[in-house]
Image (cartoon, rainbow, N blue to C red; front, side):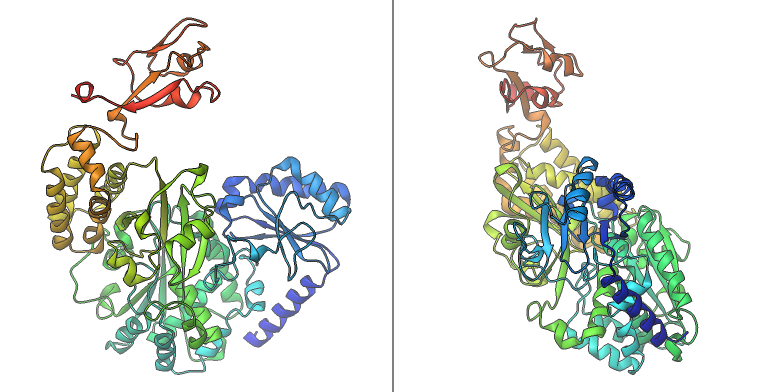
Length: 626
């Protein structure tokens, strides 16, 4: 079947569904939705629809980005605007079915927003909500709107039109279009995508390979996973366009095995592509032949580095090698190879669908387009966002994210994952683009954004992220293997009250040595959390070392838990919950914590009734620490 026939069929099916007399119910079944209980919502919904005798089409979609509001559904009645309901519990479903589907009265008290041009009675327009209004969705354009397991949904919404256009162009013309768009690699380094393709295109040799880097490993990052779960064909279309441009006949998607739903979505998508003539020989009737294999990684963070990934695909231990030669000259099995990450490919398909000028209209002079972020941490509205380059950190955290949770004060934000930097409140107006973040001591990275509040100890944050990168070091470089270990030992001493004069200076010296002496980007960026926290929060380091005090009251070794005799009601809740049996006191008597037994786990603080607030945490005295 020719693609034009597939497209005609897809459009017909899509329009029929949109104009159907049956209501449609879209339910978020990405990993975040499933984890929040979407499976129970789906089961209850099916039961209630059967009871009410309603024949509705239920569509399982990916994450629309409102992770804080999962589980989430959208109800679309014929001729009516879709209404979103979030933070659902199974017991709410019968009410929604009765009122909205049977009674035609949307529940404004439960609704998040409506997908309409004008606000419905009591229900705001969805895309006027503060969390969505500043966003521009390019890579995520279809997530939450289509069934990711149905290729016809993607095709009916312009899918593979970009590939069709590319195959009518010469490979160099495709590369020039990507160059003109200003797209830079979204995997972290920000290297110009078109230029990277040019190097591989120009490299001598008939056999060339192309790789999709889906080895997303940053703690708190889920951008690539969500895109593959919600719209795999946007990535795969871009992948095919890149393969045509550089002259590759074989491609690999390197994805970590911890992403089972994303892998399932990819396998389904690849099968459907073959059925539609979009993989294999003579794609879309052209002379372009291409096929894709999935390689599941074992979760090594270092395999996100290009040369380590290549080694892993080849069946070797994932360890980086010196460059040059770069993969564009000698990559997979010694052949010219191009590697881009998931989000980059999602942007490529959009660029070829709508044009380079359209894409370049977003962003800044040097950082074009948009960037996806996983917004997590101490922020009210956590989730997956996509914003134009150049937006400020303040607009993201306070506008989209709704500010700091529980009414606390903002302290820092880390961009770029465990290799990124921690930026203070004084830099909240920093534009989010490659140059600005680098100048501040952070990096764009793949898109992790972790927000921290006043209760966060920045020394402990540096220790946490260095623990991760030190454990993930492949050990090939002495400075990365041993330098990060020595830095981690110093940080552990500081957070446990054993810091000493000169530790800060030694951390700075070691950090620079690790950056300079490491072969790959893991070691080259691993010290960033330490260096930026010293740069912007040096006073916290000094308090830990000189005063044996954690200003954030976070480092356990520097805390003392006491019970205020004026507030204690003798209820005994804390004593019963204490795992160390460190609390003594009879019924209706003032309780006391035995400091010699206390492990400072914080259980007593968490279980003490808030109306009493009898458990008090204070900085531990230096004598007690010693």
